[in-house]
Length: 255
Length: 287
Image (cartoon, each protein chain N blue to C red):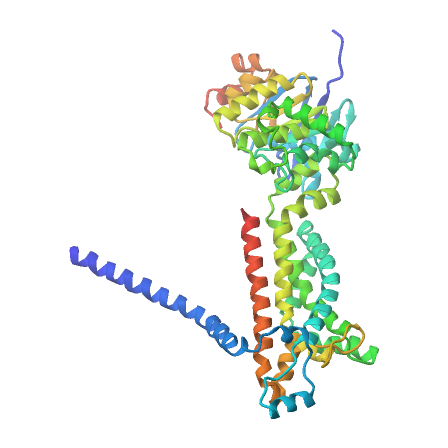
């Protein structure tokens, strides 16, 4: 079997908020290209913490220590410049975060303006249309592109945030419970969208919704108390969990 | 049982009324001041009151002898105030905003904590002391009172207000906003300029308006620095008048007593307008 370099690889990744306790303990896992990997686990198990390590969000908080390696296309991100890493790893947060002072149009392009990249008007129009079509938002907003991003509904705002992240053509898209603040219909839209998007981008999604993990992910991780307990094909993990703790979580005994 | 409930209801009502009456009492001083200044002041207000400088002693005497209304106005004060305030703002706004950004971004930093504490102390410094210190620092070496000295005194007074409001507004912005900006690959300066500061604009602007309304009525620091001037002057290195200084001068001149109220009304209306405007902007921004 030929070995392909995984797009993202955790190598004994540790994150600690305080000196005494580790929030993420020695996680090692390889993520394949163009897959959706769900990270599951009870609250406080370190899944968001692990996710936020991938785009160096922890760098913003000097008290947080990150150890080990995370390889992006074989390159250790801890030795790369944060802005380079973040340009290649997009992120969508739990609550929609459209920039309140920018129009829908400018929100999609905010990645470029924040990176100091100048675009011509025709390039801008093209990117905005492509990205909004990508997230199935174009038909709904094409006539109101100059309205503020906060004018949209929660689900639309979240899709706008995905469009904004996709505009930068990232290799990996991190999603931190992107549907937990949304109603079921908006959630369904986003889930359908993610299945569509995996052709272009590798998605790592934190979810506490097992149904969601089952519906959209090809691979799943189960984390418990900071450790990666089990990682594998979603179908196998759900049907025949190897670890007792995974079984307990899946049957609702923990979490 | 029934009478007990009734008793409680009556007590409830009595307390509610008591609170309402006390709350109304707090509004009394404001309306008393407004009424007093308005009743005495509005007769003074005319076009010339805003376009002409303080009358000379000769003109005043003439008017009094002929039983006419005292001529002249407060144009010298208005121009002085505008000049002093603008110079103070030009320096205080950028420095205040930058300092506010620094404090909000580094709230855990020891140095920032010290600066933050000092800002509080500066805010609490009596204005008369700011005036006398500015006198020693600026007026004495420059060998004369000047608009510049006045604006430096007001700059010192405005600075903590702008720093605080900028810092507070930036701090209450959701962290996710900053993280979202940085997650897109922006550096901290760009995220601050394009995401955080625009989102905080309403609060920062409100803070600036409040700082202006706070210092525009300051009299004590200007007595030591700008001194006053009875004619319209545009130079910044000479003594200059200001509206609150004029009120004090009118008060000390037995023949110009009537003009106190016109000048007071102008100052009061200006400050109230700024306050109402800032409240309105804050509400609009919060939506």
